[in-house]
Length: 309
Image (cartoon, rainbow, N blue to C red; front, side, top):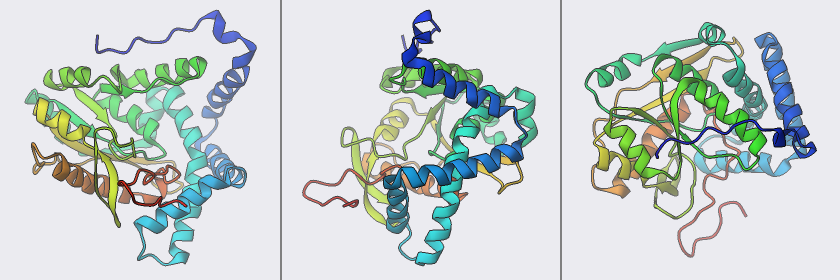
């Protein structure tokens, strides 16, 4: 079976070991009903507080910006980092919006651009690999996208079964069903049936099924070759998109870009470099809203030193 079995809520999830999780999710739910501008300010404060506590993450953000944008002045990178920290805190609140807001409230905050590309491919019966990036509002972007054109989510179960229950049910609200991220055959079946499959190839997933390709100013970024595998085996279309929050207005724009029409088939190395260019474009729609706290360049070619030491 390619479909991921939905976790169910059982009495065991009421055990004291999960009380902190239940309290956190309950707080997310309650906060999600506050006016947006209050959530925005709370999110900024949370991000700044978190970076004072988790100083390693702040160093990771600074190092990633230095690696990717060496031509930026230090002052420009400092401004970008400050904005990114604010957005990092807001991510928790945007996750609550994605999981708990009713459809009508999501629609009130989101403007769509480029959905005609998806509708055209749907009319042709063409499977679509939706190339997402780990923007800090990705959960809300997935919810908004699925409300208009439901697809298939690629899912990694959380190790905490209590949190996993809420995470799964939050994400399934606007997806047809979920597929385990390791279930490549399930993804291929979905794509061959003309489904839209969510896929985020922008992180460092380790050396397995990967190659080194340029990403921004880093010449050797460990990049998954899974994109090439899925596209070559299913002959699907590849469509990038980005979710952008418009400063502090409370408005979001979901931008669907045209299908990538020059995808290098049967060449995983060239495909990785090509997809990274699409990833760069999506990130640059709002670089302050990207997940720079991830150690994107942690995996290095054999014999090369860490970029984070």
